[in-house]
Length: 153
Image 1 (cartoon, helix red, strand yellow):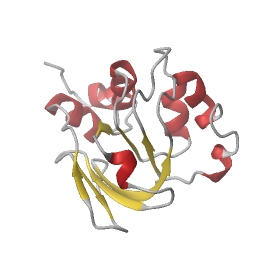
Image 2 (image 1 turned 90 degrees about the vertical axis):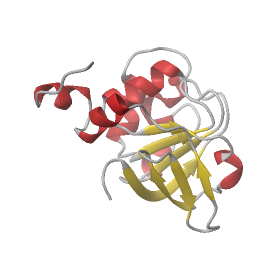
Image 3 (image 1 turned 90 degrees about the horizontal axis):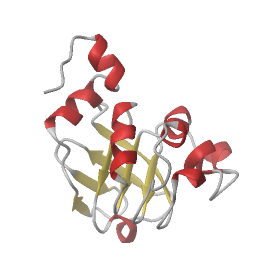
Image 4 (image 1 turned 45 degrees about the horizontal axis):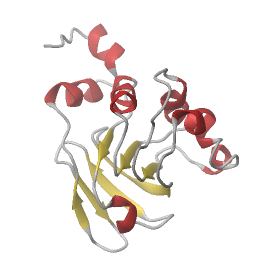
């Protein structure tokens, strides 16, 4: 699968997870998460994921842990853009929290805006990302995009 279509095991978190709790790989929510997460896993969250400080520490800790993507009921705008800029695909998808259980395996297509739960077979439609965000993600983040001659319009 490409960077814009991922398949992996999920880790599910609730609502109102702020950047301070995400920093250090979800250390404010589950101090042992950093020891359990594996590269290629997908993070699922409820509403208001990533609110709080706008620095890169929290999103970067997800990337460094190997999180392949994020799907949440809603994501703070600045947090969403920071994830994209560092090369971690993310999207909002209403109903995702109720549609999955911890440990499920899902397929996420960030271009089509779809999430399919491989256990239940249920497919949800999420928000599609704008073309510029998809171009940035396809190159692995904003810096690789710009280094390879990309121009933001």
